Image 1 (cartoon, rainbow, N blue to C red):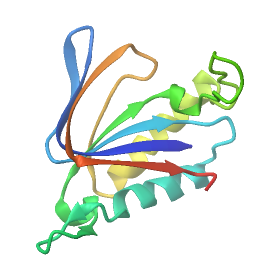
Image 2 (tube, rainbow, N blue to C red):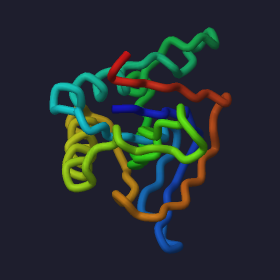
Image 3 (cartoon, helix red, strand yellow):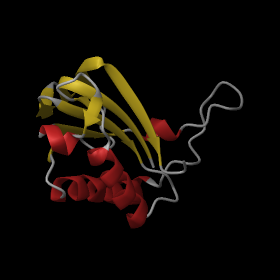
Image 4 (cartoon, rainbow, N blue to C red):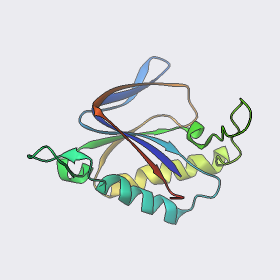
Length: 147
């Protein structure tokens, strides 16, 4: 599983011109489900995501988590995070999860994050989406369950 995390002042995702998810201060998270992901991986990554201390405290230091600031999360599926670009010029997606299984795991991940008390919004799995982000910082982070 790979997560590309952006700290945002606001973010929204649209499908066919209709906004399907919108947040204020929080995290826009692009979620890539790998072929070997399990429920244990989802739990571990959800905990890491919501406890990652990437928001500034009163002293201006990154010392607060999404939970600490009461932020929201926009969770957007993105299989291209699993692209292998190491050979040739065309990305290979052999590490991406099967779409049927990946959809179930993505939805389960969203539920896990919500069950931990985070106000979430989502995109639409496998849809062509337009994501608008007002990145705060800019602050962008990469989480890989393999590392």
